[in-house]
Length: 109
Image 1: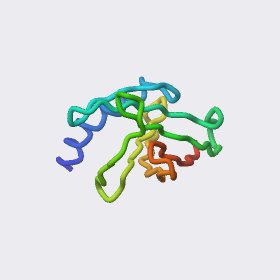
Image 2: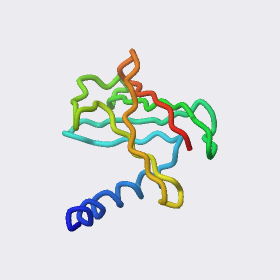
Image 3: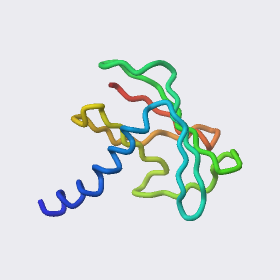
Image 4: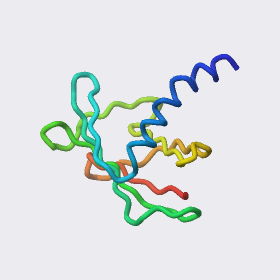
């Protein structure tokens, strides 16, 4: 139980940042001294109870496709999606498309 509380202390601020960031914006992050630009694109506006397809675009600071992704916890890509009221959380693993800079997936809202 103590570990769950400690995990939530670290997870909740990250989830809050994701919530504030919005669903269709570009963002950039720095990891291991490499700037990573991300953009989340939906094929249509997500609606409650319906499945929406999305692409997560990953590029370096020169807008080149991000390469040499490393596997973490048995997956190349992890996505955490949070409802506006913070009551629903989905942790999914989008599949990488043939073009390495895009992770694609479907999620039911």
